[in-house]
Amino acid sequence: ALCWKLPICFLFYQVVSGRAGLEGHYVAAVYEHESILSPSPAALVERRSALELMGRNLDVYEQQVLAAARQGAQIIVFPEDGIHGFNFTRSSIYPYLDFVPHSHSGKWNPCREPYLFNDTEVVQRLSCMALKNKIFLVANLGTKQPCERTDPRCPADGRYQFNTNVAFAADGTLLATYRKHNLYFEYAFDTPPQPDYAFFDTPFAGKFGMFTCFDILFFEPAVNLIRQYNL
Image (tube, rainbow, N blue to C red; front, side, top):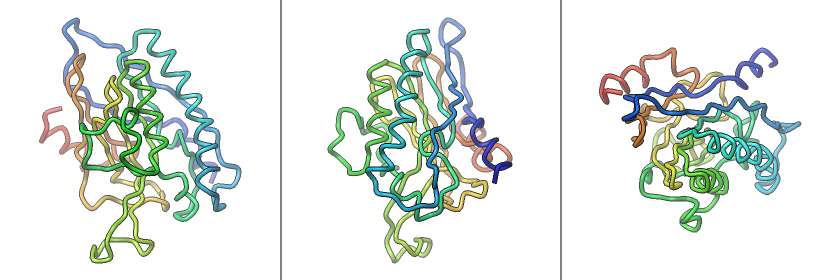
């Protein structure tokens, strides 16, 4: 288990930029986070306990967003699994999952509209960090999505669980979501039915695309993201 855990702590999103701003450059921050982990990731806990642990990691994120903004960063990127940790089972990770509506990118501001959906405490806090510090923010978290029994791919427990990236604008709006396609022994998560081609626009560097860690070794979605969307 140790050989698997160590590299995960230090892997970041692969972000592809289209062009620099008018000044010919922009300032980006990438934070390498030593996650505060659950001592018993396979144990079943209540949502409240899961939020308490994730809140401790989010406290660190908030400090780093403030520090980055004060140094002039226009975008900050956080690592995979940084908020909830790893080594969960499918059942034990469930209390750590937020609901993120995949189709609402660009239409929902979780900080300003926290009442729209249940179980969105983590995305609300990330959105508020972006809004408060006027900075674009990319982070990774676990998400859930109910599915119908008529869906032939729907898991037996009636929900999909995804390893998800979220990108927020400097006003806190959810710009894009990306569900990791090539999972690396991540038995708590499902592979999306189709590859996500996730990207978002910025005023300082054009478009950014998102994929995660192990995805970089595969044709989908990385190569098609570049070919089809000219990133």
